[in-house]
Figure 1 (cartoon, helix red, strand yellow):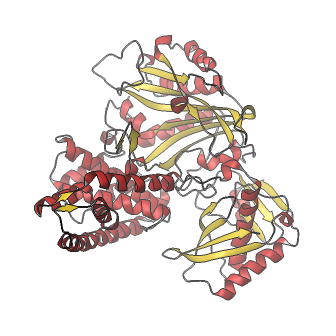
Figure 2 (spheres, helix red, strand yellow):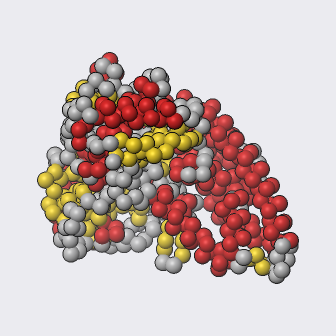
Figure 3 (cartoon, one colour):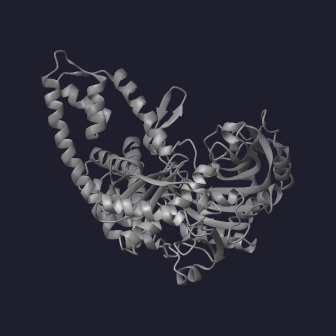
Length: 598
C-alpha cells in the first residue's frame, strides 16, 4: 500500500476513534512534569500520572501521535565491547513520531492485541505472511507470557512466527524505582519485497523490522523490589511512523519516505553528491537530515543551543550535522537544508510559527562553530609546539574534541600532517568517561521523579505552582509562564520567561509570598473542565491547541489556578518552609529558580 505520512497518522487516529478512544494532543518535546528525562522519548511520558491511577479528563481510552527525541545516536549503542552510532543506518532516528494508543484500566491483552492486528492487517492491508511477533519469555519475577502468544495464535499466527524473548527485549518499566510495569509483545514486518519471508521467525535477522509494541502493564513494583499484580492494568501501544511508512511503501530505508526525501534532495543539491551511491556519503546525509530535523523541533519548543541539558544536546546535534556537512564539501548550509522540514510537517502549527527563529538559531550556531574550529586550530598549534615527543596525549586530544568539537578523525588527520601520533587508546578512555556522564544526562537518570509519585516530589510539585503564582505577583507580570521544570524529592527547578536577573529583594518577596500563602492552609482542589472554561476562569496554561476536550485544573485558594496533570498535596499546610536556593539564567530571555522545602 502506497501511503504518505499524513494519511498514515489520519488512518491510525480515526481507527482508534472507532474503538471509542479519545485523541490526546501532541505534547512538547520538553517534559513538563517528568525529571527522569530531558526530552519526551515516548508517547506515554505525558501520561505517567494517569498510568499511576489518576483519572484522565478524556476517559480510559486514548490515542495520539507524539513527537519524540532519543539521543542514542549522539552517544552510541553499546554492543559487546564497542560503541556504535546508530543514527546513520536506515531506520534509527533522533527525532521521530510515535503512534500511540492506551487503555487506562479498561481493556487488556486480548483487545489490545486484536486492535493492533486489525489496524495493521485490515486498515493498512499488511499480509499476515509477512508478520511475526515476540512475547516475554518469563523470569523469576513474572511467568512466561503464554496468554499473549495464544491470542496471536487465535488470530492466525503460527507458532514458528512467535518468539519468546527475555526481559531486556520484552519487558517495560517501571519508569522510576517503583510503579507500573509489565511484559510487552512486539510486532515485526519482513521488509524484503523480492524475497519470501522464512517460515521460522528469527528476531536477530535485521530483515525483520519492528513496527509496533504493546506494553502490557499488569504489575506494580514496590520499594522492596517486589512485583505485584496491579490494581489498574494498563495498555501502552507505540508504533514508529517512519518505519511503518517505509514498509508500507516497499522501502528498506526510512530516508526514502516523505518524512525525509525532500531534505535528502536538498543535501544532494547543495553537496553535489548522490544519496545511496557511496556508503560513507549516504551515512553523512542521513545524519545531517536527522540531526537538523531534530534541532528544528527542539528549537520550536523553546530551547536554544547551550552548554547544559537540552541546550547541550541541541548544540551537539547542530555541530555534528555541520561536521558531516563539511565532509560532503558543504559550507553555510544548515539554514537551506532545514527549509524542507516546514513543508513535511506543515501540520505542526508551532513549528511554522517559529520558522524564522529556527533558521536564525541554526545559522548563528553554524557561524559560532566555524569560529570555534578556527580557535581550535590555534589551540592545536600551541599544543604541539609545547610537546617534547611526537605524540599527542589522550587528554589533549579529548580537549580538542570536547572544547572545540573536533572529531577524532579530524584530530588524527591534523596530527598526521604535522608528523605526530595520537594516543587513541587514552583518548578512548577519556571519551568513555565523558560518554557515561552524557548518557546519564541525556537519559536523565535521576534518583526519582514523578514516576515514583513520592511524598517529597508531590510537595515540591505543589510548591512549584505557588512559585509561579508568586512570580507573576511580585514581578507584576501576568505573562510569565513556565518554560520547563525538573522536580526530584530533594529540590524543584523551574524555568520561566523573564528578561533580567531578579534582585535580592524580589527573591525574598517571592519566598515570603509562597510561605504566607502556604500557611493559610489552603485546600488544593482539582476539577475537570474544557480548556475554554479553564481559560475563562483564569487558569494558567498554554492555549495553543495543546489540550484535548477536557483538562484537569488545580486551584490553591484564590492564589493559584493552573492546568496540570499532578500530583499535588491535599492542603498547603503539608508543605513546610519554602526556600529559594538559586536564581540564574537558563537561556536567552529565560530565568531559572532552584528551591527546596525545609
